[in-house]
Image 1 (cartoon, each protein chain N blue to C red):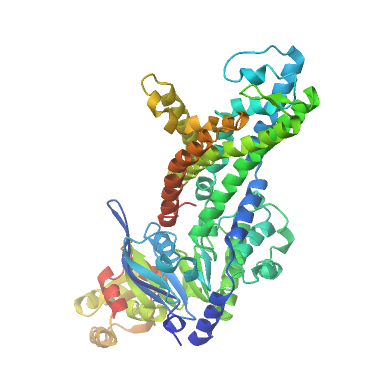
Image 2 (cartoon, rainbow over the protein chains, first blue to last red):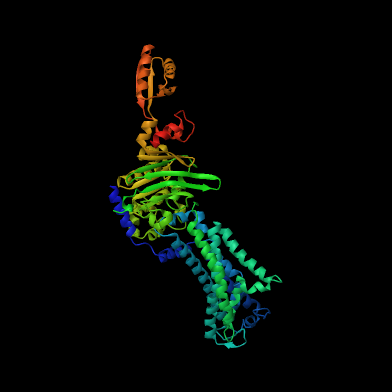
Length: 291
Length: 321
């Protein structure tokens, strides 16, 4: 074959339609679907509400104190108290851990297995691969949160009925509206969780070690929680990522308190945007030497 | 016709890579022309794989740049890989997916109707029967073949293969060589990194030899063998005396007794001088046959490995000429 013929064929290949970022994203989701570890996090998210409901049914409920007292006292009065309580408890550690399981793994595992070089020698740009991985990690976080909420709703309602609940402000909220608020609250909780995902992806991109990135992500959230509890550092509280885990509670007040949600949006942005930008730059420039 | 249309499939301009104090690749220049089956030779750790990774845009050079059909992967990203396929080190796949599913993934990342070619490429590499099995259960040879299949999905005009026969049994190596030969006959330019010298000698028409990150020879294989291998084998009725006489002639180099007589290196003029000297000494010449050096001999001389050949710089000069 002549050089000219070769060049002509190469040019014709170059003109061919390139895969969209959506196509890459779809494959990222398929990869997640085909890995057993994906289901570990989801199973954890689904099991906790079940364990909670079963244990409450077995022991009989006694209301407790603390931040969740309004809803703890309603456990047996309305099944819709269960998803609120679960969100209250799981938002601090378990849901960030589940999100970190995928976010911390999604780049580092591919680098370690050598498959990053495989996909980076195809017709997609690094930016597309990065965007697809970020979207996939966020999708997983969304799935984990809504799955946990749905299992909590179903288990709670099956045990204690679809009844109205009393909000943090003491007003009674009808069951349909309470159900809607449960899902909106979970949606608002995704704001800080996406920031956790961004940190996980940054560590996954930089660390090149899956376990290290997952542990590091959880470690950062724990450190922030500890910083928030240190006497004298209370002033930092509103700016700590872990404090934003509570922003959704504004929805369960009457009237709705939007201030913590809006505050959470920009504070989480301060964590997520630089983390993602740094991860993007590292991913674009990194040497793919694994495998 | 624009610059991309006339550019050679691969060009490297003073390509370098430094890791802290280690200079892994040192100002490598090479050109792979359309239609070449180009051997990229060097001992382990010579910088072959690092060079290929830079050519494919997987790692960033610390100096110089590479072009694929005139496009720099560091500047234009994936577009530089249009018409290019291959793998560096062992091809890697998702072990929890079947062979076919892996190819579907890669085809979707290629676009250009690559999905429609999956059955065809599986047939080419004779993996159709195992396509529904998970890659985690594949042998090394099967993964190598799947790597070739994944490359062919892209309908490449340039195929970059890094040690494709490594880890294969003799039959697998033969099959791999046959496959590469077939692809080359179909007009695909092949850049083949290897330290399997018989493989390169059999398949390649041009070579670059790297040692310690530097190209010590680039050019036609025949030219390398001609220049580096102007050797002769001499058989006489008294080889010991013939060796002594050969040693006294200035233009005769590296004369030594071997199983079949006396091996030596010299140009034609000095070989004539030697034959006259032997005649004057009454030593009968039974045979005087020219011998081209094998690639293996040349390789060891160029890379400074132990071998009784010419010093490294002689051949390097020949290659650069």
